[in-house]
Length: 196
Picture 1: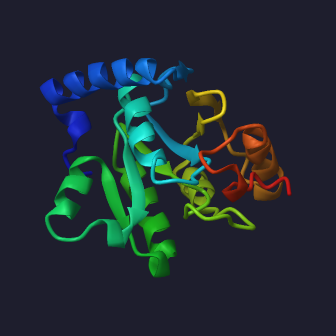
Picture 2: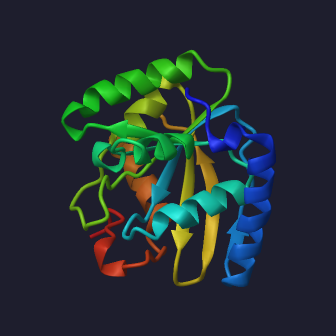
């Protein structure tokens, strides 16, 4: 995986201090801690606003995570795309989602340490069903899923728990979505935790 801001010692430390200070100043509380597993997929939900991105980065710095995240390819134009990649971004062509899943599984199998954030909704707008790429990556790479969240109502953010998938999506997905049922996004009406 490419070199990112999380691999840059001095800047990473500085941004961690800034993130902790900013979150505290804004009244946010960090929940959970960095998983001890060396490789895992992070489910990041709810995803209802552009504000999710800076808050997610701050939470990642506060928890001392080294992450990569997936974003639509239009977020990676010339020049700005280099900055987004340095921030851990991986451009995704939504028409080639299956290829991204396979490539990410291969990346996990070739890495001793790797963390990839995947928003299951795939967009900031309300969706009727979650995309299951995060689950297929986790089961294909045989890694756990960290359930991460931003609750704009309580101003809590972090990682709730580590979930080991059984391989049965019909059983696991409702359990994962149940974790998010009481969490409020920046725009609550845009979030479907699968309980509608």
